[in-house]
Image (cartoon, rainbow, N blue to C red; front, side, top):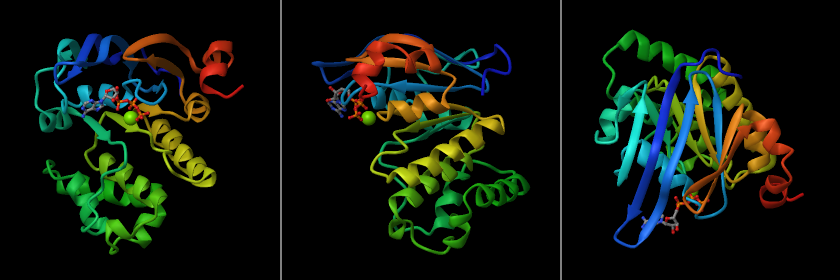
Length: 243
Ligand SMILES: Nc1ncnc2c1ncn2[C@@H]1O[C@H](COP(=O)(O)OP(=O)(O)OP(=O)(O)O)[C@@H](O)[C@H]1O
Ligand SMILES: [Mg+2]
């Protein structure tokens, strides 16, 4: 979905991130996401995609630079506070709670909320978006298939009622038919008005659902454009689309 308005929901200015003293994983990243967009971030193994999401959600403090969420600087705020402000991060590898049931996982997503009626409504809506989770609501998270765990991780994030949903490699390790389903749901979530920041190695899929995208190489944005232009860009085709 193209931006419904020009309001910036997230802006990164000159973001640097380091691991220890030696690994300079992000080297001055600038990036903008408008309300209502799906923005994709593509890049190879080790480019810094996960690091960028961790830096936004506060798990890894930015070494330098500004992160503005709806105009407010959040780079020095703790992860749970950033989550409460409205940024939900579905991490690489899903990280659901394997020993909790599907329903308990979803309730954990809503832990910081106090609007019982709203929680109930959002739970019903999560089960509409992911009917398989309704069927499996009493089952332990760890017994779900990879695709179902991805759905649970996304549904759990939605239970936070975020304004910005960040997904790290949602298609990783999934069969193509399950990946199709996941991407359909991402598009549906966006149609309902949710802003999505999508990190993917599967560049073709990511560019097919996104309106705009950024290309990250060794910690730096090397290209940004609307998704269609990137799909047609010979350099992107060669490096990321296997053309
Ligand atoms: N916990 C860590 N400690 C030290 N170095 C790390 C750590 N996590 C990542 N790195 C390094 O930081 C760089 C960026 O890694 P990151 O995981 O952000 O890449 P990525 O683009 O998400 O890769 P992938 O596609 O494999 O998920 C890499 O050089 C990686 O080795
Ligand atoms: Mg990663």
